[in-house]
Length: 508
Figure 1 (cartoon, rainbow, N blue to C red):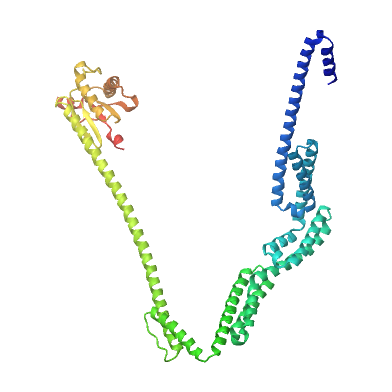
Figure 2: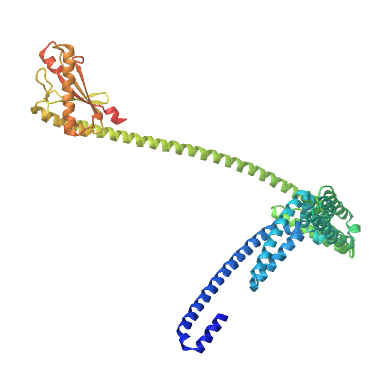
């Protein structure tokens, strides 16, 4: 600022300083602007960090409260909350960030200590904590306020001892609180379960039920005493005690009703007739619903017994009907099982039928193909035979020069028909068999028959592009004659090439 003032003074004193002074002021202004912007940006970053830290601590505090840390370490947690609230308030007011940061750090430290204290309290004082929870669950603060408040004071003192690291003192205080919590819990349980019944019994006595309906009144008293005894013995058996209390409640209401009714009827003897007639009327309605008539000249008891007999008969019929229904359901279940089995068998039969039809259709197509192969060759060219599942094309028209294995061009027509035959079953493995007659040496005949079979194989591979794995050739020499070798005609038949299409491989 002083430099700026000196610069302004020079501007006033002389024009020679005007231009450089203006430049200096502009540069200085830009510097101050950049410096201030950087400072603001840094401060905003710090504020963002503090705000995020505030959010994180608040999450931890909420989780700690859910775990009752505020109850098990109240003083330390309270201090942590105080520091947190101060930081939150100062941050909202835009106060000094150092103070905010200090409060947040302190809140974080105290919160960690409170959580540690709470864990220690749960470890050292589990029974007192459980007693407190049970008392609250039984609504002891409402039913046994003074006793519950005493227990709370002892419990709070125990938690302070935990915070001061006085475990023995905490255990002693907690035991005092635990006993009072259990007493308050029992009072609350009794009040919630049998309190209303005691009020009803007081009302029953007020209307003189003990005099005019003594049996019912005493029954109600006995039932509520049983309920109370159950709770005194085992307060966890609340369900059983509540059942007894409900029975006592019914009997107390019953006693009140009877007492009022009897006292009302005693005021005028004519009222008794009206009472009995009203009962007879109600019984008559029941009898009508049962499609029967009852008479009352023998007293109400006879009518009641007749109705009971009818109801018993109806119940017996109901039981028989239930048995019949049960048997019907069982029979229906068995029938459904049988139907399911039959349906499964039907499906299997249909599948078999479909498979059979498919096989028959495949067989039909195969027969058509074989027929077409048979029709390809003339009588002097080849004979189509069947050996088991295989098809044998015996090339009677294919001849070789004596001792030779070269296929002459005039036989290419027959081999073309062989190719067409093979294309009818393109996936069938092919075996080319070469055979000779018995003239000549056995080994020479074997070699010649193999050479001739191999020549046919090579021709077919070259002209059809068959893979070598699909076709093989073998020479049998003179080992498999089909006619006598004693005549020329027989020897001619034995000199042959057989093309075997192995249909068993295709069919499988």
